[in-house]
Length: 322
Ligand SMILES: Nc1ncnc2c1ncn2[C@@H]1O[C@H](COP(=O)(O)OP(=O)(O)OP(=O)(O)O)[C@@H](O)[C@H]1O
Ligand SMILES: N[C@@H](CCO)C(=O)O
Image 1 (cartoon, rainbow, N blue to C red):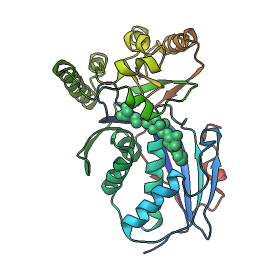
Image 2: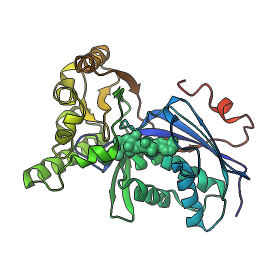
Image 3: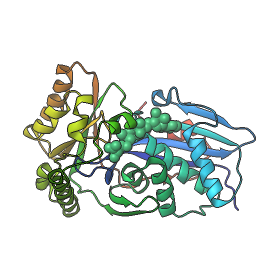
Image 4: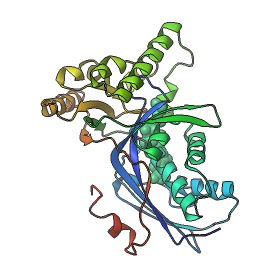
């Protein structure tokens, strides 16, 4: 085994479902976390930025646990690590923070030991942890991912996002855990709801793959999760129904929420109107929120060149939002 001195990974945020593609569709977004992993004599953590506040800084941290899973899978031992992380991805808001952490730890730990595991194996491991491949697939490969998981392996295809596709996400100032937002979804559905989602999700994939942005509005309709999650995200139902009247190509709850995603044609002249409308709805509901214009990320998790000897924060300075 060749053990590298350190590995730094840049990982994108992601939005899952895109409306009807519950647990199957994901898109990477231009909002990032950075993770550096080094072998060490004693495990230490350096967690930077407001979004990582409160996370454990001992061996119970998700990053450490996932890194050790990679070493076990590869049959090597790297028991102590120095872990540094900075993130612009808000925690527990529907922008794939847990997926970015899992993917960063898998890619970083694998590279540290000479990359014995393939990226597809890393996706299987990531999905086994997240239980659905949508966010992790997008964070790993970038672009739009359509994926199916059989409980062990993921089959996926990556779709290159149309060059005019942009997103405006509204991030409410409250957290909503994925487990809470999954618990409100029924375990069984009637045939008409199933057909509704299968047909819209199929249409959406075809529209995204062929660049038919005009089809997005109708294709983003969902009956499997959003109606049940509406009570957890005030203003969401109104936005899903009316955002297209203000210039959006379509709208959805981002992942498990509470962030709301709108897809936009980057050349549309009503972008300011859309932002004002969305923020106005949040204000009307008494919710503080931030609006972020994000592009689809095309690269997925990237290992940064390791010749750079500067300290972690100096290396990523200039790229981070803080
Ligand atoms: N950098 C990190 N280091 C350690 N743990 C993290 C990190 N980022 C996220 N997590 C863990 O993931 C949890 C958030 O996961 P959760 O699935 O609820 O939300 P999310 O991934 O942000 O949203 P969604 O899955 O809807 O897109 C955090 O509470 C924390 O336990
Ligand atoms: N597909 C997942 C994404 C959030 O992790 C959900 O909607 O619950």
